[in-house]
Image (cartoon, rainbow, N blue to C red; front, side):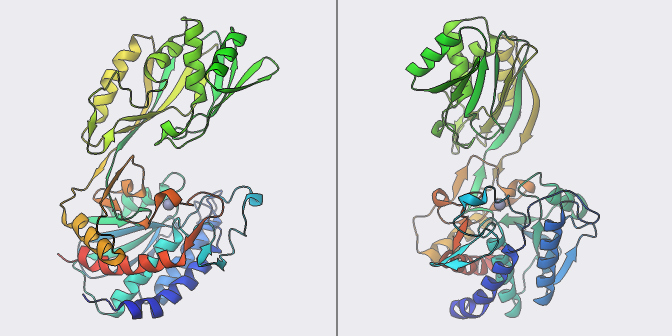
Length: 447
Ligand SMILES: [Zn+2]
């Protein structure tokens, strides 16, 4: 199907931009459940807005009576092609750290400013207007295309889980909640805890499985010696009463090598001083300065790279030991390939692996029609002929359903302001997105 790009940008983009500004002004952070608003009134308001907009634009829509999700539909096919966006946003956080009002949606220097502008209200409404163009120009897909509005992507995915339980699994789909050109592979993710018995010291710190534990508090024997050894390793320490505060550097759990893990360096240092701690000995041997468990899994590697392991939380005291692991597993391997050898090795230290969860990998072959079509459109629109589909550590919204990939909407993930203060999207990037999605949807939904 021929797309009139000038008409698309002049007529459809200007209206899309106005509506994106409006929807940013609804602060759709998840909050306490209310009647008919299980994820809070903000998410209910944003769903009402999107469904009403879909109706105004002439689409068939559906809004879950409990307001857990909703969608806009186009096309008469039997099979569903899903476009999975989300309308919830992360909190703005400390307002003093913003240079502008996060929910005003101002436009300045070619940028649309605001929480949700990029993640994911902008890309979601751009997809709505891509569909609007296609509908107005009588495109007939072989699928029933559903633009699904998720409401809890930033928290527990209860919204899309409700959709899947009630509506069933779409045949194929994408989410505009990752990066361009397309993420064809995402590693499987294991979350688990190393559990053990009591220790002679206490060590507490860290906040989440997928962040590097950047500040920990140590109390216990050999404090001065440990402090001196940490300083020799250029680690910042501070005394607070009888407690040693150890400062590392935060980083995302997919990039632990960019951070400094305060828990692991403290435990490894303890093990240098004293060999009576199972967890410290284990950490010194397997985790300190080794982001791949390379002694246990020396050959675990494929086109998506090595196994990546991160520790996020540590909780050790006179009663128990708990050290969390967040592991990103190359797509050719399964949970059991890691669980078995790791569990066996932990036993040697009187430790065990518990609270294990497994998020399956995503793999859409590079030569599948889906990936080939997306790459062709992306290269045509952007002119970047050398662009290649990417493999990542995993964790995009695409994992919510099988046969789904992340397609856009970040052009440069290193410059991403998603979840950061001063979130914005370049107007020119939104325009590029509209052209890419409008051209891609017909290719992806014709059999
Ligand atoms: Zn998102």
